[in-house]
Length: 216
Image 1 (cartoon, rainbow, N blue to C red):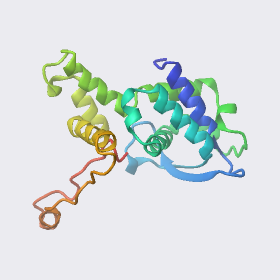
Image 2: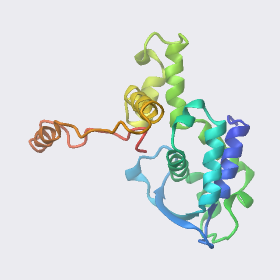
Image 3: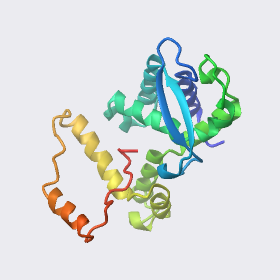
Image 4: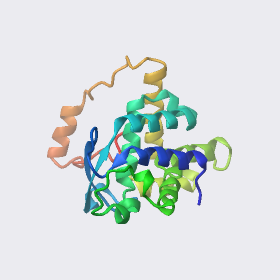
């Protein structure tokens, strides 16, 4: 067990927002899942769950208040989206216990403690935490450069993205939110047409951008 009380409470609140039936106010979410870390194209099992947004917002508020300080610079909707992404990316842990179970009670009332522990462990090792640990290895002198950190190739292998680029995206998003009050907009790439022509001619790969930390 690697998680702490905040991770466990986050999972409890998050599961309290999910049922396997619609109820009076459920919003359906359908997705495919596989083992944690499986790329999107290889997730072969389907799931239908229902989110209840009062409870989901309470979970988001708890994460924002009790999680790392950078979360206070994110909108609640962004945190909510990340929590939902976490569930779809880690539904493998819930698959056996929820299969063909159309119960009205929220998941936190009937999912086993072992499964909750697995989810809390997964949350404690979430992508954003990994990238901040990578940054910390340089800031605190454990590696002279990001590329020298043992976490760098592990991150690249797991997420198929450059952690330096992801950290720049996080910093930019926080600056737009806290310094520019969301008024600084992302502009269209002025070279977009040139890039498309190069891709069509085979001079550039068709897919340039991997799954970034802000688009998971």
